Image 1 (tube, each protein chain N blue to C red):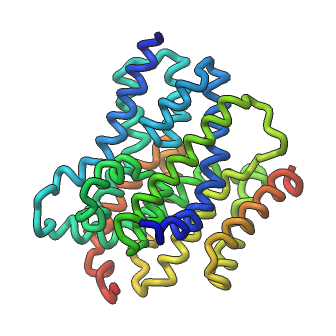
Image 2 (image 1 turned 30 degrees about the vertical axis):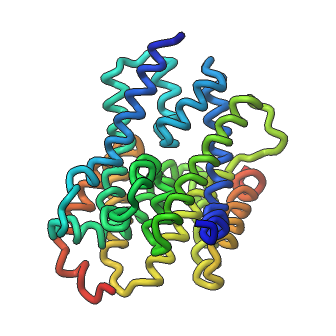
Amino acid sequence: MKKYVKKAFIDTLPIMAGYIVLGIGFGVVLKSAGYGLGWALAMSVFIFAGSMQYAMVGLLTGGASFLTIAITTFLVNARHLFYGMSMIEKYKDAGARKPYLIFALSDETYSLVCNSDEGRDYYLLVSMFDQIYWIIGSVIGSLLGAIIPFNTEGIDFSLTALFIVVYTDQWLNTKNHVSAIIGIVASVVCLVLCGSDKFLIPAMISIMVLLFVMKKFCIKEEE
Amino acid sequence: MNWYAVIAIAISALVTVSLRAVPFVAFRGNKQLPAFVDYLGKTLPYAIMGMLVIFCLKSTSFALTRGWAPQLIAGALVVVTYVWKKSTILSIVAGTACYMVLIQIVFR
């Protein structure tokens, strides 16, 4: 376990930057909607899904029905179904760590563990560190309110940059790029056709369909 | 106590963890995964990462230079520095700093 602490910490530094800033943003917004520290903590501990927590602020203040909340959560987080499917093998022997690993499988955690062979202790540390950063961020945001000493506009690009790095790294380490291209093309087409609020589910479905239709090309030369 | 918010948060938490857990529960105990899950497990990560990149860039707009140039320039910088140095930290710091300068100063 010990030898992974340093590696997990260094690997999650970019996520720390992004999560603390986005977490602060969430804490600030939630506070201004009338929900203080305890609520920020509860949501970051129990939900732990960034974009959904932002969406929850609007749902709570608008007094949305429980059914609306359930459906919105499903639509916003449906992409997580994907993550589990590609982590079944990796998390197979995780033992007692498994429930938490599954609970904490966020976009950013997934982007690190899906490429790693370091083993279950490393996966656990990455998952825990990431959630801790997120909790710290939302607590700071809730406490400080809008008093942030410097202009952080654009710092959330760190998470975009992280995904671009992982994408590039996967590209450099494989010969077959069909799946990588399908991901980009299907998402862009669905974004243009369906708009930014509604494109994720169509994108996921078309990715699955295309992966099966083009199976012959996707497994060729796969290493 | 605001029970409305408590229940709302509980529902959202339950749906989120269920989505994360469904694949693990559905294929629990299978020694040999069904071929299609095995296939998706191997190929999906590449496509998903592409989808996440687009997801992050979804509010890109071509109406103003400010709406697309910063992410294009900063994104290209991330790719180029990564191919060159293979350092995750370097690429993310360079890309983010570049994006912040562009959005806060250059394309104000």
